[in-house]
Length: 428
Picture 1: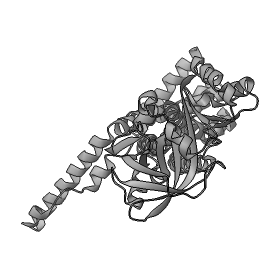
Picture 2: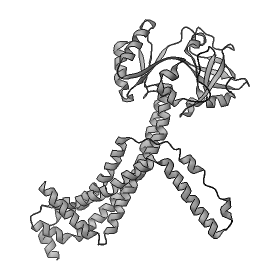
Picture 3: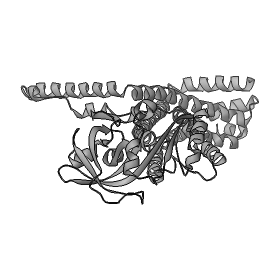
Picture 4: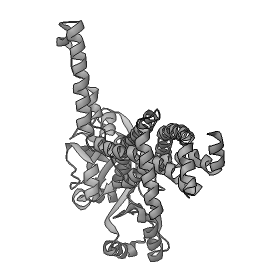
């Protein structure tokens, strides 16, 4: 503890002297670079998380659930549902049927769709489903036989509106029903939109009561399980296999595995590209610290003559790097979180600033043209960018900003271990 106190004391004394020297600008630029890197990385990762999680949330809540379970024998369905509802990790269970279909609208337009039969009260029973699936026309009403709710892009492709009729010409999934039929006619009760375009373009929902007539008696019943923590999917699948060894369970990680893999790779590549900012800053710190060590040879010799070990002297300069890293990381952290949480306000402010500059330039150099100016509408689009901040990523970025300066300082000050007092005095 005593060693740390005098190391910090000497480091701060050298820093005060350096503020008046030529290396002061390099030190401030290093801290500013770390601040910029931390801020940019937090904002970029928050925006990337917002975009990706809007897709992932829609897939999990509407399409895949956390776990899909099938091959439950009919005599075991009641027991399975009771076990799931009693499990503390399960937040919801939804039985459903699904099949691929070819749909035709009133105008003769055709499109492929995944037809899913769900309980009529799913909007009340499953809050996650209701939160992600937004009804933009009509209502999600599957209480009457022959009712259907379709995605907005599917409705646009088939030229459907609320009240239109649609026919499922071809349907897969059961040998007890004909593949082709013109008798599977449904009335559109609602049109929905969610955060994932493929669901908007291909999904349609009918009531589970209608599924018996449409899918046939041999259709396979599935269960969508929502967990309180999506990270507990593997543990829950082990429970299902222990309850019902013949059951098949699919995790949300396996569902659309390729799509989730692309999102993860995209995020990792972007993260690595932005980290190059820290590489440039670390090189700057390394060079400025090497110059500082060379300029402070006399002080190093004095400290060594007073009994300080080379490792302790090296720690004096490492402490300076840590201070520079902290001085940049802390404001970068605060700015990054502030911008991420106030994205709408920031972009509207930028819109006002840009318009003000354009107005002043037009007034000064093209008087009268300022009346034709208007604010850039793209800033309103940018203001709606979704943002999602993850605590572990923020902490990792903050620590990386500090440790990049620490490592650069440690590498630059290694030459101190090779210096001797006699060498310095001989040079003097």
